[in-house]
Image (cartoon, rainbow, N blue to C red):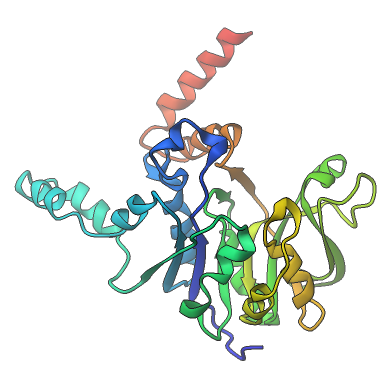
Length: 295
């Protein structure tokens, strides 16, 4: 296990087709669909930057060039904004631009699952712990999810998995963790079960799409057999890693929006719009009027 107590790099798997959001994702990467006025992916990158991430590894697929273009300089656009003295817009673009060399892009040629996508980043990550953020999951809370995980990692090392509570009756739909010794900021994970049979879940805490993993996961994933869905499952690899390394759970206090689903995407737009002082009053008033009209 790496002795580093600093997590500098993050993996963002962005190769998926986004079939649950068709037809919008037919010509646009699902990660680039906007919530209010920013791509979903930008919110996730912002969360990682706040937590101290310095380098982003985007695991892409075909038809994802828009993601690479988004994090590049758009000379024609910026020149036009300069000529029109659009200082606020220029400042906004500069704020969301990653520093030179802070982004790497590697290709997942086949859709073989999350575990395979993570493995594709092995040479760029190297022998150090790394963060993994699923880019269609938006976390909204007083303390950003990854920042809280970093705080726990600084105390425990090992591997960190973010979890949230779900209705116990729905635990069979998620990856669920077992709860061991409690500690400041988290707990020891005693086991992980992917979609347990009804009534057998060890808790109601589900894995919500944020991880800090040690680099030994790569060797495991390199020989990992295909599991559910005939894909290389990350959970299977983590179960093997847990035989030799400790896993800790971080309870995220907030709300997760799955923007890979229509319902989650719509709710995310409402929630983040209501957070915006510049548009809240208008949005809130219109929402109340819409709801009143439905009664």
